[in-house]
Image 1 (cartoon, rainbow, N blue to C red):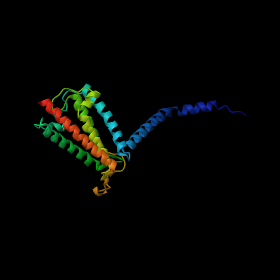
Image 2 (cartoon, rainbow, N blue to C red):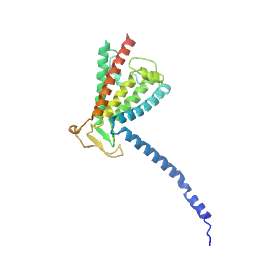
Image 3 (cartoon, one colour):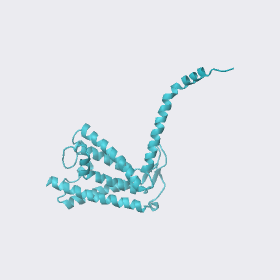
Image 4 (tube, helix red, strand yellow):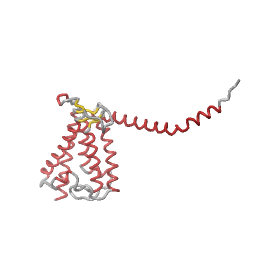
Length: 240
C-alpha cells in the first residue's frame, strides 16, 4: 500500500517553522564569530609585518569613522582642554626644542604601549587597546578642531590625512605595539574578559624579539622621529 507523505512533510515544516528565525540568528552569530576569529588570526599572526598591516587597517577604519563623527556631529573644540598634549607648552621656542619635546612625549606613549603589552587578554595584548584609543582620540581632535595650537576643524579627506603628521605618529604606535607583542607577563587565558583574572605566566627574562620584529620596531621609531620633526616645523610656522 502506498502511503502519502505529503501531509507528514507539511506537518514537519509547520513544526519547525518557529525555529527558522533562531536558526538564522545562530547562523549570523556564527558568521560574526568566524569573522572575528579570522581578524584575530591576522592581528596576532606570527609574522609582525602581517600583524602591522592588519592592525593598521583596523585603526585606519576606526580613525575614518571617528573623524567623520567628530567633524559632522560633535561640537568644535570639544577636546581642546582635555587632551594630554594640552599640558605641553604651545611652542618650545625653536624647531629643535619643539621636536625634542614632541618626540619625548611620544616616546612616553610608546613606553605606555609596551607596558600595556605585558598584559594579554586571551590572544590580544592590551597595548593594542592603547593604540586604538589614541587613533580614535586623534580623529576626534581633528574633526572637532581641538589641537593644542588653535585651528579650525579638519574636513575628512585623504589629502589632509597625508599632509599632517598625526597619522604617521599613530602609525608608529602600531609598529611599536605589534613589534613588542611578545613582552607578556600577565595572561588572561579565557573570557569573559571583564571577569576573569590575569595570571602571571612569564617574566622579562623570557622575552624575545625576532629580527623582523626588531625591524618593525626600528622602522616605527624612525617614522615617529621624522613625523615629530615635521610637526615641529609646522608648529613653528604656525606661531611664527
